Image 1 (cartoon, helix red, strand yellow):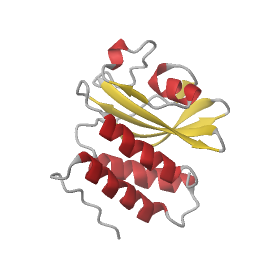
Image 2: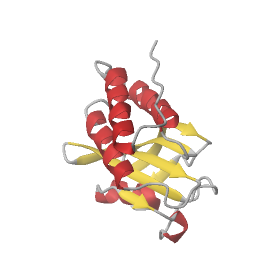
Image 3: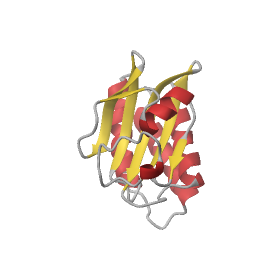
Image 4: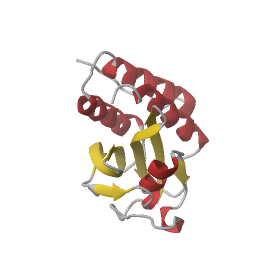
Length: 160
């Protein structure tokens, strides 16, 4: 049994180092992508305060399909290029959105969400999934969050 309890007094870079270390410990040697995404979604829910949704969308036949997550029920399918997740999937670039209501084409799966961070996970030059974080707070995510979740995405690229 694992016990990964984040220290709330840690600075964000240190918190993300611990999060990536916990994800590494949980996913190392496990070949099942869904199991790995499920455990990491649970870690995201534990480690990141002020998030109302944290999880994965998987790229399946050119569109994003809901994967494991922590939060309220969500949109099941998102076309590439639509919304924040779709933009990350289409461009292969992280989307850090301080106010989702100002983002063209934003998809409101949860009306409480006000800011969002979406990081594409790439393998072989192709987006295979995205990590999606939503918050009810405006401008919840910053460059430390971006760097931390991008590091997590790099770790998971060959594990999901």
